Image 1: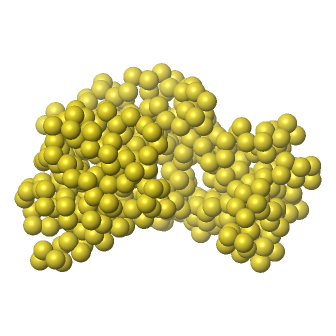
Image 2: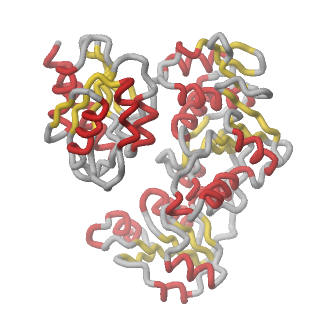
Length: 458
């Protein structure tokens, strides 16, 4: 970590806690800043605020009082999820108070090389693969650390990563809106689809936020892009970096490609058969190609790349292989909180699927699932607030279904509806909050239920 003095006695407001806010506040305090933390959650139920106060950091909880900004703050470090339409943020802009997000602060104190990954889908898997590939190559100096939107605060990582190390940072569009100097040596844009338009206002703003990842790059840097998407060819013109395209569909000019005979290849070098990967789905071929491009730019050996791709079974809760029970392979895709994500998961498999689905009723249409269910799914087991809605999907697709009360009882029912060789897939297509606090808890309940099933069937 760099020994910087620019924050000494500087008045800084940290707006919003969670992991990023807590770690940003601690780092700023360590750097000598006069830190005030403001979080909407009430103090009595706010363990983070309680701990920060005990450490000597000023905390204000329960609301976001706009009048607080009259205290002459010189900087705001904003929780990425808080939109710029928030009254506190708007007032800070009116007062010309600079606003950054936590990864920007991390970059300012870091003396490591950065690799930044963004995109609508595939960020977490690509980030994880890159980190694993870099660390698999024993001839490389230093350690690769995952950080950012992957769930590991970048400010915590930046304090332990040294000059020989690499920070592999997943960066959301929300985080990228608040960077100023962050300069990845290698940037990755996995894809761009329509997402978070309620936050950004329109698609142009969303795309512009993603492209901030490359705004500080130079010709000595690299920008890895998905060449199968025509939009990328135009966006590439906005970057000063050297463009390194990847393509699953054989796009002309791509460096990392899926060959016609099914190999993952880089610069003409066939590395391994795509079907030898542990993670299923064409979307994961794209994630692997993006990771391969970065790994080869970093000098990683083919052997290290192959070892990772043959071993990696997926990021937890994202089409994660759990185990096989009497010929049925169980996969946990609890992160699929909408129709689009569930559609990707359903299409990832060639074998018949027994699908576990349902959850919080957001009053959104599920009809786009009907043709996919008809083509790929043997049976549905539904639960949660949207169980009846998911039953209608099954009826429209001509697929049998069973409704149950919860996920725990859904697992043995799915097993009963399956046959050896089938995939039993939790891909709910709905948020978890009707029965679970987070999608992670939902996924853990599924994993535990599968383990109990395996023990009972042994």
